[in-house]
Length: 122
Image 1 (spheres, rainbow, N blue to C red):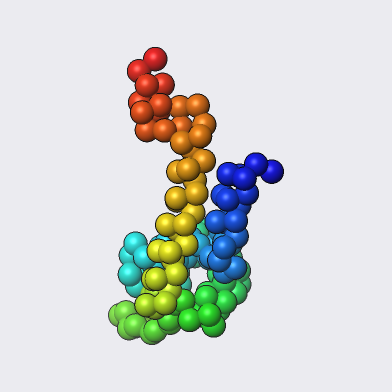
Image 2 (cartoon, helix red, strand yellow):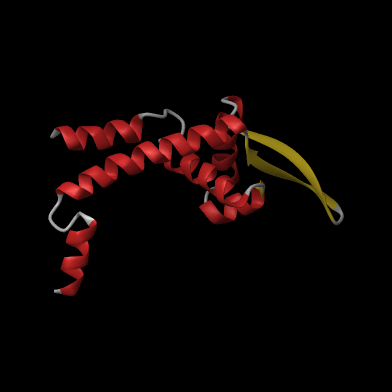
């Protein structure tokens, strides 16, 4: 494997929990929206309640997210949000992944911004 490809793979695997697509999607949804209910996450991610619950438990046990209960008319709902640790680790992980991908793209034909713009004009 070329060293640049290895760097991208290493960046992807650099966070044991967030390298899973569902858990990364949860963290990104919470980053974008703040507090999100279980039902909203389930609908957005299109996963079963059991699958989502399992991923949420792993993130909560690691201290990346926290659970709270909110009251909506006639019922309580469970909402989740990133902790400070979760925010920091999500931003660090996505930054590391983005940097590795940008370096890889810059090495491909048309991968740099100038190269992509040039290819778009052809």
